[in-house]
Each structure stands twice: as structure tokens, then as C-alpha cells.
Image (cartoon, rainbow, N blue to C red; front, side, top):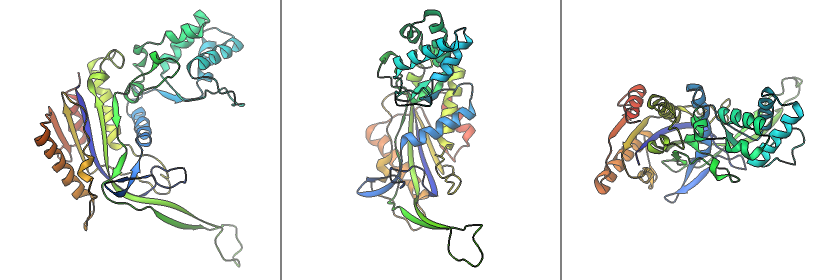
Length: 345
């Protein structure tokens, strides 16, 4: 299995990138110490959104419970009456993920469905011709993912029809801090602009939780799977290189947007190691930090040192072989992407 690994060290200041059900920054225990944590789901969402900005022609997938409206419109455009189109779109939604009977304002599905524009157009056209939901859905083929590389990269699970399930070509781990982290509580007050001058006191007071951390982030991409017939085999090699280049750039640069206007956790990594291997499975280097980093001069530099030591140790011990090893900041981002994507075929 030919694959790409990205190992990233990134420091993020006061922030709450990913909250739990109590609005607290997510944490996890690793190596006996509490760490700051950002779920893979959270970071992938940010990566998907940035990928749409970088390559909008290749990343047009939409994950939604509101597919009824665009389906109905596409059927109307194909010649059905408004009522026929609405009923037809409902039957499609029901066959894919079931219509949510509790939704009163709009027709929604019970769960999110990841859909490409080409798939939507194909289903609408087939239904207009056949008037049969199951036959229309059977018209979806892997080549209809050519405008939605995000579905091939991040996968799609369809319980009602496994032929529509797409195994994700990418793999992400939860980002963990390389050191022990305790969440902190910020007490804040807000001024009432219209409060009479003779009155004292804040208009409101409250608290919120935050932390700051140096994270180890890991992502991998199965390059063989990405190029097979069930994923992006329909694309040319140059188009797949563009997909992989976009994936790399977005994975390196994107940061979850939670509290971006009040805490703004946007930073860039201080170190990125890219590895391409022809065989074996992706291996993350989180065990470099199984003992939490202790520091007197920041965490980032020591984390990079430990990461490099761990990678060197694993290569020597287990005989890991790579056809490409490249690191930022030893090279610039453009050169990093060019060297890695030269292994995409």
C-alpha cells in the first residue's frame, strides 16, 4: 500500500478549538497525563472547507440533511411538475437515508448524506426518466465522484445501500498535546453601553474555559486506494496530483474555527515531516510523547526533537523504508508539495 504520512507539530495559544458537551476544551489522558485534544472530525471539517477554497472544481461535496430541495429543483429543471419533483425527491431521500418525520419546516433526512453535484444531477435525471427511486439510485457510479474528491478522501457510509459506501482514502488521528495540559477558566464581564453613568457594575458576567497547547497532528493518505476505480481512477494523474496537493496544503494550514473571533487560534505548524512509503501501513509517531514533554523554554523545539528521534528509532528498529522524506521548514511549502506529489500516479 503506497501511502503518504504527515507528522505535524503546531503550537496554538489561548483557544477552545473543539468543545465537549459542557463547552469545555476536549481532553484525553495519554501516558498518564491529561492532554489537550482536538478530534479528527473537527480538524477534518476545517480541512474540507479550506480544500473547497483551494480547488473548488474538485472539492464540491456537500454533507447535508437538506438534499430534498436541490433534488426537487433538479427534477423540475428536467421537466417534472413541482409536485412530481417534490414527491420524487422525497422517495429518493427515503431510499437513501429516510425522511425525518419530525421535521415540520423543511423536508430533511434523518442523517447527513455526503453528495456530489454529479451524483445529484444523475439521480434527478434518472428519476425523471424512470420514475423509480431505486433505479435512479442505482445510476450512481464511482465516476460521479470526479467533482467531489472530498468524498473519496474522507469517505461515506450508507447503511441502506452498501454499494454507495465509499471507504475513506485518508486517515486522521485526534490531535494531542505533547505535554500535560489543564484547562483554565476565564472570568469575563461586559459593559452595558446604555447603563446610566451613576450606576456601577457590569452588564453581565460569565466564564468560559480555554487552554493552550503544542499539538502533534497525524494524517495519512492511501495513494493506491485514491487512484483505484472506486475512488478517483476516473481522473488523470495530473488531476489526482492536484487533489493530493490540495489535501496536503489544507491539512497543514487549516485550523478549526471555534471562537475564531474571540480567541483566534489560527497558527501555522513549526514543523511538518512528510513521508511516502511504498508498502506497509501508516504509523503515527505519538509515542514520542508518551512521556509528556517538560520544559523551561517552550514545548515546540523539544517536541520536534523528540519526533525526529522517534522516527529515526522506528526506522532502525523496524526497518521502515521510505521513498521520500521531506520536512518543513528545511524546504518551503511549495517544494514540499512538489516532492511529495511526484509520487502520485
